Image (cartoon, rainbow, N blue to C red; front, side, top):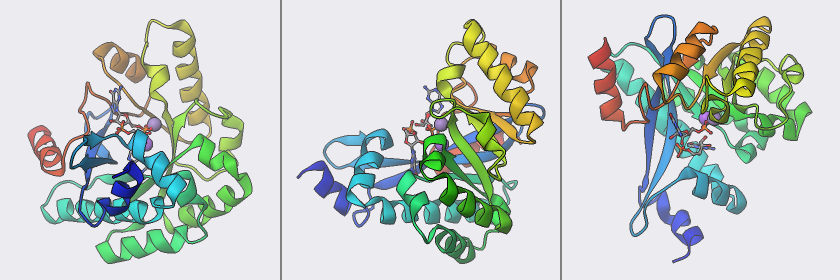
Length: 254
Ligand code: G
Ligand code: G
Ligand code: NA
Ligand code: MN
């Protein structure tokens, strides 16, 4: 079977699973949210990275049903944790370019929230810089509609694409995620240290929270905390975890 054919059947065969990576508030040290990250357990190939199959899903149109499954599954998990008495956590879901381009993003998202009994404030959507810039007018409109309902909006992989903080103020965003390529060699690399500080300063002046991704060392964490970064994600805090393990992680820190 080709990868495409397998992907077509993957939803029915229940081969997808979500892992969740905590976002830690750097002032309190508490987990304030999680990012849902999809994995594909292929029967022969083992774990296939979303970096491989999300682009294929986009090309083939399968991103529609897969994206809807991810959103519904993430919201259902968020609901389940609340029902288990865990402290409320914002659930962040990645939206790919073609999901975001659909004319029915808003009703789709609102429908999932209604079915899972979550308030819009508990959901955050992560959209890459290149996705929002693909059609800036459409983006502005959709982001305003989502924002008006109270859904959180984050720009993902910030710094890798168009890289202009200027456009950020044209969109009703809540946070900016500094791409892990900038975090990788902090605090030694002078350029990336300067870029990181500049992004934090400018984002704050626009009233946006700053989240650093791919934080792997204590030195990176200390640098980010010292420079006022609000939240961090990365292996030195926690890798993405299956739902059960994430709940254990939260309980062990409570
Ligand atoms: O978790 P990992 O490093 O394997 O993810 C690789 C890439 O896949 C990242 O860019 C991540 O944003 C993306 N990704 C993970 N889960 C999803 C998802 O549910 N939807 C979309 N569109 N992208 C995802
Ligand atoms: O594009 P996006 O930012 O959504 O990608 C998140 C990806 O980064 C996921 O695939 C996740 O598994 C991965 N990731 C999470 N923490 C770390 C980390 O500390 N280091 C590295 N290299 N990757 C990470
Ligand atoms: Na993301
Ligand atoms: Mn990212």
